[in-house]
Image (tube, rainbow, N blue to C red; front, side, top):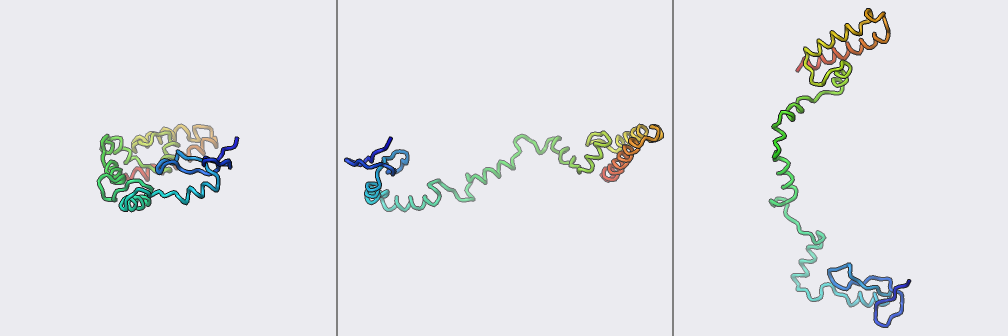
Amino acid sequence: MKIICDWENCKELGKYKAPLEKDNSKKYRLLCLEHIRLFNKKWNYFENMSQDEIEYFIKSDITWHKSTKSFSSSDNFFNILWSNALEDKLNIFNSSDFKNFKKSKISQAEKDAFDIMELNYDAKMDEIQKKFKLLVKKYHPDKNNGSKKYEDKLKKITLAYSELRTRIGKR
């Protein structure tokens, strides 16, 4: 189906869009090449506008006709965002969970050591020592007929214990 030019008494193919209204790009008519050229020669977007309106349009075109505010204005997006970021409406920063979270920053080496010793990450030194003594008794080669498997496990446990003792002992 071919679309015929919307110009009066024209039978050419209408391929080019010509707006029907200034501020509504969705309403248009289709014109042929000859008539779109005529339309464009006669089209004056600023027709019936005062000089002040034309200047305002040109200035606002710089920001795609969206209103802007100075950076220091109180309703500036970044000021609002920053102010809200500093507010602690839910009292998160004063909660005990947050304070414990801040304190519980442990290294990957410590996490690995805790995992090897089958302990929670918040274990205290006396709990670590008790667990170490228990694991030494459990995995000692003398108790396990000199098994190489248990000997390797005991080496890992000893290294994990010394890692935790040096790091947690300093806290």
